[in-house]
Image (cartoon, rainbow, N blue to C red; front, side):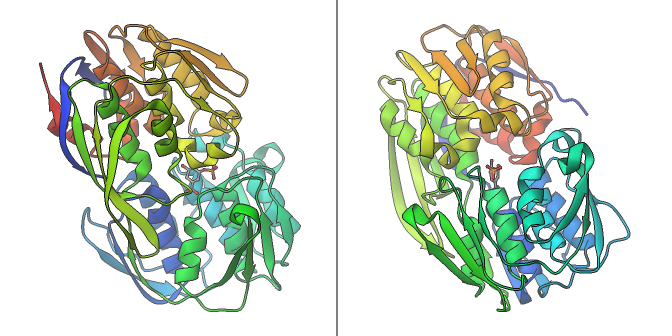
Length: 438
Ligand code: S3P
């Protein structure tokens, strides 16, 4: 169902948002809870399409996951390591790269069982060799279209070998697939990343009792020793900083705005956007910081900034704000000068080619944006005029364009706005609650 939304520019944003649960941690709570022994209680789960795809696949693999009800904690009964049943159906991962890639790691290690994973049109075009290749080094048997690179992916489960694996890209999905595969390998598995990616898998595995060590400069070397059972835990999932980022940027730019974001996950592998907001000169304050279930959280107050300085994003910060590039590209349109986003070719293999799509859509508002091979160059100061824009089925594009529409003169239309259901189904309700029309 294609849902078009109209958004009138002007107005300001004021109020409190309880940020929905972290998507990355929600996936991991189900996956790691499933392979643990005993009960795992999950609170704060993100009730959105992507984590629900993970739940659906795990049910088909024989895990007893109850019907999940929005905002209600629930318990899953873990089945222990290497105990998935061979499903009679294809595992449909929907739009979710995290579901497909993390499960590939576990399934490759499920000896004597066969599995087929598929996804929607977008996921079926995303590269899977980044996971298949290291798993094959461990002895995994994975097959797919385009020389094993694209879904549908067939996995023939094997007993895997522990290996030392250097990953060419800093990707938490790749790292996590290898670590999960390593849990039942015949020896230690060591992953070395070129830059640190989000570490939720490592934190959660440790909390469940895995023998995992973080080594090397900036924790880029992670070693998992097999042999220990994982034990079910209570998981309290913090709010997703990637979802909060739409409001952090909107409040910073839209005159006379003041938003309090409650319960935001502040894991340092995810807070690159705050570093860029510091460079921009945004006016925000983090309050009530604490650590819950191994993850730092806090509330963030953001108010309109006096003026915004342009920024450069490059190098090791990329993995710490990889999902925030679409909304940061909107932010750049309202900075005093030219901003640059470099080293971001990974954006081309997300749910859409986010460099191309953001450049194409922002230009419709009159933005001064140039697409580069590995990034964007954006000059602020153009006056946004209302436009008819399209999410092109990408959730983060849909929500970034909603914020851009608030900054445009006139009434804009956003086609395929329902893409936001992938990570933030209540986005439009939150927008309505925050918005004071002029
Ligand atoms: C994710 C890792 C990131 C991120 C994605 C979620 C995860 O992808 O973009 O939204 O939960 O591990 P990559 O690992 O491909 O960088």
